[in-house]
Length: 215
Image 1 (cartoon, one colour):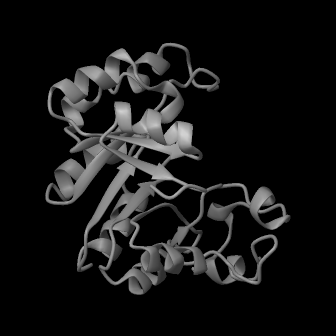
Image 2 (spheres, one colour; image 1 turned 45 degrees about the vertical axis):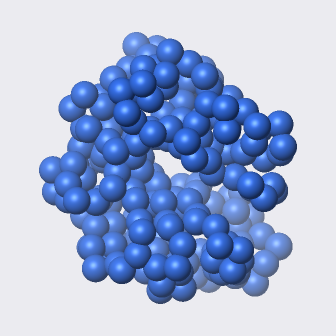
């Protein structure tokens, strides 16, 4: 929460990841396996939020917050990008829970996901919510080889109709991102960590997700 507060104080928007706990709470956390973040072997989906609150993040006295807590803190002062970490072929429970939280939020907010099913779900259930397709080259991904070019090329955009494409910095420029950008789809890139990355992002994208630098 201190990081989100610092972003607001600096006038920056923020990107965050969300998953669903066992008791269907939308929690802000990057890894489904909590070993790296907490030093404890635990999995987000197997615990209630009350249980997860007992696991402090390494090196801090803080615990992972709920999405609603973060939005209450931000209170519409800067933009929020919510990456929906869905690993299911069929969207539904997590997406609906996220929509329930953000539906009445008074401020600039967008949802994004690597999962085209999630983006497609929002295009039907909440077409007014700004949505983005997240993509990468997937060179080292364990996913089936035939799926990599489909997701890396954002081919499912033809069906899900995102408002922007969020693409990994190391993969830019590429034919797919250029194709979509030429057709009016803004490109957001991630993650910029130094000045050279900042220059690369500004050359090949319209906005960026960053850390350790101040654009």
